[in-house]
Structure formats: structure tokens, C-alpha cells
Image (tube, rainbow, N blue to C red; front, side, top):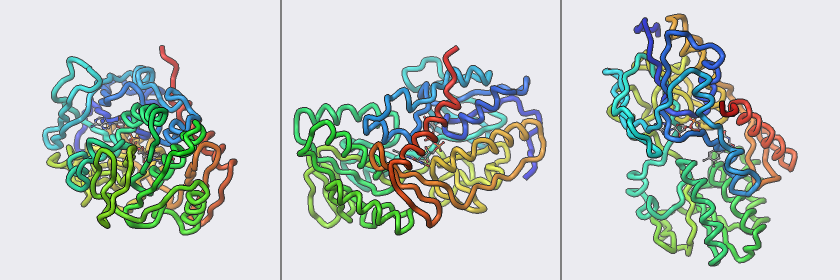
Length: 388
Ligand SMILES: Cc1cc2nc3c(=O)[nH]c(=O)nc-3n(C[C@H](O)[C@H](O)[C@H](O)COP(=O)(O)OP(=O)(O)OC[C@H]3O[C@@H](n4cnc5c(N)ncnc54)[C@H](O)[C@@H]3O)c2cc1C
């Protein structure tokens, strides 16, 4: 689709996700003098989700999992607005904002010529409450990841005073990694009576993985004495989970890692959206309805060939997104981004052990954890500039 908006002066980057940290580092190398760049994101750092299980396991300090944004934004010659996007009018070319982190003097609306969205996926609290009453108020929810990471120490504190019964709701990669990490941390802290349950939602563990990986996960769960319930969770009370079968499970630490939702603020934006509500983009990561809007990472869905929503794909989206945003500014031809069919998946199973898979191939061991550790640390180090 050719660009229809020459004379682009204002670029707004919504969110500082995996692809946008790369866009910022690319702008830091060479930002066109007439391009005014504003980053809208709620936290002064980007928490690298891939390292969060290691944080829970006690292997990383919080700062090791974070990319400080101020130095990167400054190096890119951009402005940072500490806010959340709460609405978007793609026809009027403006985003609506709400201040975050106590920021003052945040504009209610921000106009743009060119917009790029990398705000990730969310857990929509209203939707969650309708499907699982009590969960929004009582469960420890993995998104936003910053809130989860800030609350996790309270679980450690609780375990010092009372026996804990931890239930992870959601048996995808995030749920499993957090479960193995929590189990390892609490057992290593001497809480031998802590109980751990995985609520799969009715299906198999690690559903999106090959059968061989599922078998490896099941073996590890058994070895670690973790109960697996192939049940749905339909409600959360202060001391129990209500299950779809009508049974209750005593639980004082419910952790919610169910599949994520598209941000509700995209509804009514005028942008073409997928059936699930994500920004529908073409091979240039450009909105199929608005040529001056781009989107990458978990907030976007490719209209031509959908790929899984994961950090690995979000990272790979960064360089082509940066190229195309600059090409759009210069009204030059855009280049298609071809995500790989298979990616290397490294599923951590507590610090020190991981399952590696690539397509149908899978192996596990301490070496896989060390591999993941090196990749994750390298990603953060690449973008973590020292404070000026
Ligand atoms: C515990 C856990 C472990 C994971 N481990 C892995 C792994 O090992 N490998 C893997 O491939 N995937 C992993 N994932 C999945 C991975 O986290 C996501 O796929 C990835 O974060 C998507 O990247 P993103 O750039 O789309 O969004 P994000 O990384 O979520 O970044 C979104 C950015 O937008 C900001 N933002 C959010 N809302 C707004 C708003 N309204 N306005 C402005 N800014 C906003 C956020 O603060 C953040 O800066 C894991 C997920 C979890 C929860």
C-alpha cells in the first residue's frame, strides 16, 4: 500500500515493547532532523518478560530484567510522555492519554502523522471478571508484568507466616515458567509444606507445544510433586478457587496466567481489527485500513499469515519496523517482513533447567537454561544504555 501522507513530521510510538526499543536504538543512530518523535509508555523502564520467571525464582534482581527507557529515549532525540493510551481516533490521527506513574501535565490528546503501536497484550479486567468472578480483585495477574513483579515479594512474605497453597491458572508457557519458578523459590526458602496446583483450563499442559515437549513438562511436574487439574477455573474467593466441575480448591495464592486479550481501547479506533480485536496489519506491519499506522508484537495480527504471539516474534519485528517507519517518513517503498515459520523456544523450568524446542525437535537440560540466560541477558544489555 503506498503511503498517502507525505510531509510526516510527528511520529508517535505507543508502548516501549520489544520492537519499539529497537526502533529507539535505530533512531539513536540516525534520526532524520525533521522527525519529531514522542514515546508514550507508562513505566520508566521496559521489563523483559522472558526474565520474569528467573526473577520469581530468585536468580535475577529486578534491575537485571529491565531496560531503562530514559537514556534510550534521550539518545533517540525523542520525548517521553509517561502515560497510557486510553483511546485512538485513526481518522482524526490522534491518541488519547491518561497520565501514569504520577506524571503531571500529560496532554489529554496527542496528534500524529505517523503512529506505531507496540503496547503488547493485556488481561482485560472487565472481561476477566465476567468470566471468572473474583479473579480481577483477588488473583495475582501476570499482566502488566511490572505490577506482577512488584507483588511477587508479598507471596514470599505470606509464606513466611502461613502455609501457602499456590494455584497457577493457565498452562501455557508463561504459566508453566512461573509455576516452576515459584515452586523452586518457595521450596528453596524452606517452605516444604507449600502446595502447588496447575489449572489447565480443561486441556493439556503446554498446548501450543509439540507432544514431546508436553510429555517432558508432565514428567517435570510429576517429579516436582505439582498437582495438575484439567479443569476450568470459574471463580476466585479469598481462600479458594471454584472449578468448572463444581469442586473447590483451597488456595491462598491464585496466580492468573491465562491467554491475553487485545487492548479494549482499540475498539472504536477506526482501525481494521482481527476477530480477536488486535490491529490487523499487512506484510509491512502496516494497518490494513490506515497507511500511516504500524503495529508490531502481541498487539498486532498479520492479515496475510498469522504467527504465534510471543516475545521471540516481537523481537524480530523490531528491525523491519524501524526500517519501514523511516521509509514511511521519507515516502520510500516499504519492505515486507517475513517472520520465520519456526523459532527456537526455550521454556525455563525453574532457574537452572529448560526445555529447548525448534519445530518438532526438543531437548532439555541445564545447558538450555544457560543458553536462555545468555540470550535474555544479551537482549537487555543491547538496549540498556547507561544514564547520561
Ligand atoms: C511470565 C512471562 C514469560 C514469558 N516468557 C517468554 C519467553 O521466554 N519467550 C517468548 O518468546 N515470550 C515470552 N513471553 C511472552 C512475551 O512476554 C510477549 O509475547 C511479549 O512481551 C510481547 O512483546 P510486545 O513488544 O508485544 O509487548 P510488551 O513486551 O508487553 O511491551 C508492551 C509495552 O507497552 C507498554 N504499554 C502497555 N499498555 C500501554 C498503553 N495503553 N499505552 C502505552 N503503553 C502501553 C508497556 O508498558 C510496555 O512498555 C512471556 C510472557 C510472560 C507473561
